[in-house]
Amino acid sequence: MALFPSFILSDESKENISKIINLTHTVAHYGWIPFILYLGWAHTSNRPNVLNLLSPLPSV
Amino acid sequence: MLDYMESVSRAFEQSTGWSRDNSYANITATSKALLDFKIPTAFEFQVSNATTPYTFNTTRVSTRNIFNGSLTYLYSDADNLKDMVRGSGAVSLQQVTETYRYFQPFYNHKSAPSNGDRLVRKSLYYGRMYYPTSNLEAMMIKRLTPYTQVKLKCLSTFNEFNILTCHWQRDTGRNCQELIFSTNDLLCGYRFLHNFLGTPSKMKTSLYNNSSLSLGTELWLGLITLSPGCSTTLRYCTHAPNTGRPLTLTLSWNPFFGNLSSSYSAKTSTSTTFCAKYDFNLYSIDSNLSFGVEVWRRGSTNQQHEPPTSQSINKTDNLMYHHLLPTLSQSSSHGHGQTKMEHEQQLLQDLTTAFSTSLKRIDREKFEIENFQNDYSCANFTSVWKLSTSLRDKNLKVLWEGKFKGFLVSAGGEFFKSSPLLDNRSRTPLYPARFGVQLQYST
Image (cartoon, rainbow over the protein chains, first blue to last red):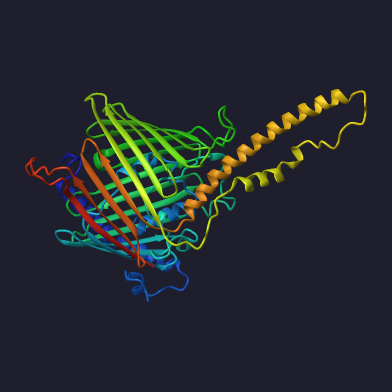
């Protein structure tokens, strides 16, 4: 937000936008892998158990 | 050794008909694989499996100074991906090892899928979370049309270091174009690769010419620092006509830094590969000569490939071209023109024999090339030694990759002639700079 001078965006607006961007970044950061797992779960016909999808170890 | 996820992404490219080698980024992939191969730097263990036909995951733990690792998940809706990705016990070693790249960019054989765009619009989503740092690597590949795809890569951290890179690629077989934009320094790039030969063609010196010639270039510009960059590379791939063994020559030129690099890579047999590279800088008059060699070891094989004998080839050729040979029994019964007819018959016989010999030669060269490739791809290799050295750096890189009880093992190290920290008068001939072991298991 430092790119915009103060007469375009007030300091409060800059702070709010910065908070929104940080929150979006955090959600995207931690939500990306659950999103990948959801795609695999939704695309599989027998809808496997979530624990099976999360488990990194080979199923016996 | 290729990671499991790298194998999956290559299987995705194979499933969607995307040519990995027809790109400027991989134009020197053969010399890189033989000289600048990656050596593990820690003890690393990876376990991978496919939980569903569309989801793959990998857990990696590594111990160097601290205990760290990563969790990787991948989703793709490409067809038959699970069948194409094999476990570590069943996969052949030459598929998971970076080695000589067979490449034949004959774009006239590239055909668009006839089932429409629905089958082409496949996608791949990849995420890798590192711990204990919680950094995230994300990637998405989307095929748009039979000739284009978009690739997004992202590195996300919480210490103000986030990079997003976008690639737009268009590959028509004859030309491959790539537009790149990265948020790091607002870097913009353009890559272009052109293939000159569309089909195996006839040349003056050889009737069957299986060689290919590619020319590529790349341009870069950082918009913040306004720092430009460019390079151009010529690649020539061909086969030895008598033995069918492939060889690749590349010539790279970077005009800004004055760096000229030429490489020669050849598969001297199905079990050995050799590469030599010479670098020269026009501005600093600095040069470097590098050598790399690969030695593959075969295990017991069930499929015995019998070497072709000249008798069998001649027999096949005679069967194929018997109709071209003149039938001497059909001679003319007219007595007065017998001398003239015999002369014409002799001329016709000479022409037919010459034509038949050329056809035989084409067939033999083609047979040798295909036989060599089949012999290599069907071979049951159990391990490979990779060695690389550079005269200027005075180093030796050693890497052993192989299969051991269902595991894929990669172990190696890099040695220098003398340590920069120790006294040069040290009697140690080779100083180990780094070494590591990597174990992979996948089902």
